[in-house]
Length: 272
Image (tube, rainbow, N blue to C red):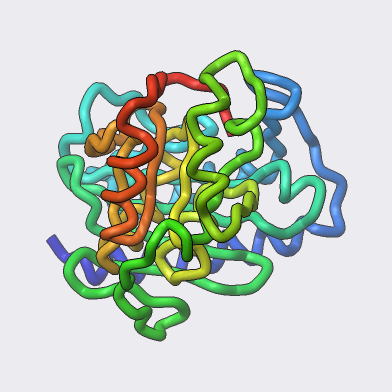
């Protein structure tokens, strides 16, 4: 398999898709809701996903596509080569702010991440990695993650999970939120993943994410030594929605052991 060829095409398509998104900023969006009033989708999300599908189908007809907007294939397994794509991760930010969103793309072979790309469209920052070859931002190599203590850590955590809610006991995460140096929430799982990879964040916790939210960033994080699991410490399967814990290597184990192992984490909690 010529992974360099796949990587080159993916980079070119991501950049082209980013240009299409930037050119939409001065146009009126067609905005609709999906599962709830805060789960937004725009015509741009759908057009960008269809753009990727067209490119992949033409160039790699034997590959399969798993996309957020549902234009790709139906899956019972991740056998073969699968492109896992979120055309705009952080749609609410895209609609309200025209920033703090990203294109997320992962290419997997038999369930194993081979290529990961997160493109911060507004800042023109392309984070990319190929398995075993390091991770980069716009071609510059990123340093491997170093350990950090909980007290030194800045973690990404949606405030929903430390407020009373109908899905989990909100008291479960309060001790961790109280112990860390600070908490942040950016509204884009893809960006929060690469912020952990680059050291802008030390950990990221979410109670419900889909495969396309995580697939691209997971390759980048793991290539730099970070760990990506659900909140039970289990490997993600990229076919179901699940909880997520992403962190620097030693910090991941500490958070899991000291703060999460006694929690009852549902597999299908409310969306971020």
